[in-house]
Length: 510
Image (cartoon, rainbow, N blue to C red; front, side, top):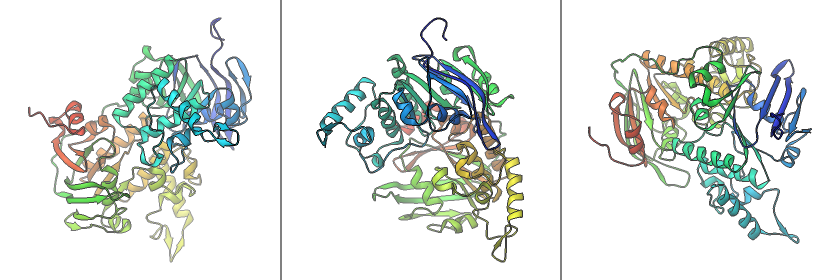
């Protein structure tokens, strides 16, 4: 109990969860106070999401007990959790894309007038909630037409509409732009001020410092400790999380870039609705440089990446790979010509989730030796190759037969990076390469990207993490409304100037 005060909002005692012989949670104790923002910090695969899935009734614990507001609760399924005042917003949103915002929020809990749906009442309720908690949404917009940040608000409203007093948010900022992260922080703080209890699963140390009251650290399934956030530094949190000293700064020597390896001339690409999203874009990426693209989401980054990798038709303009025109080549042909790609959406574009880790490792080369002989897959060679990469890239659990869909987000990302870098490309496109990764994995990926640059490869980095673009890039190009508005040497610019250019402003000449 909480020093004679009212009971904890959430108390989890000695929670153990096993999947076969793998222990995801090992005797974890967690207590969360009323009205606090409590961060759950850990590396990818540390067991954070598993613990919260147990709290929300998606998994049953192998051992242990759960108390909500001091009362023992048997969370057999999410309906029980919802009835106890819990709501969960998952990392990959659970929304029906063709439905409107309003329809998604009330889905399964529609107010009725006799036997008909009372949409007027539903709209009133939703607008009242959105006003109360500062979650502005357009109730009539379709989910497929709104930004990711807006979709997240819909998920939070959906939980509040169902009466949630305790909100579990799984990696809530992984898909948000810097501006959306600021808005999200205000929203979360506002919810806590109004008495809601918030649990945030994350590994973004800067955000824990800016929004959480307390933080519980989990490492490899075990609880390391709970700390008051104001009493610890980002460095302390990083070390508790990974169990060693972590390099928070990217170390790279200055080097002279070489020839232009990727040239984009006057590129025009439209989206699904035939709106020009890339509109006369010019760009040159040189050997031995990391060239960062900075921009607010929705300014043509996705369409540019899809055009470069052969996934979207180029209307006009050209793409040259080492002086060869590869415009509108197939993805396989582009890869063959020396371009590898860490895709923006790992689940839709990077992996076959139902395939094993080892099958995903050879997706692009399964027809070549030593993985295939006369059209027959050589399973022993495939598994041996995968085991080497699993070790080298620290993919957990270390099981090549594990399905890719069962790995944590960060470990899925490591599978993609391992595969793409092993292809030995001339040009590496890295789109959101550390999205959803913890500080240890980020350090690893950053080191790897710098290594590619040092080997004389051309690296195109597209990231919404402005800190990441600034830390890694040799040159930075700002994309706005489908065009490159400015290309700057990294050491001649800063976050403020880039932010201004990203919003469509002019550069202040120094």
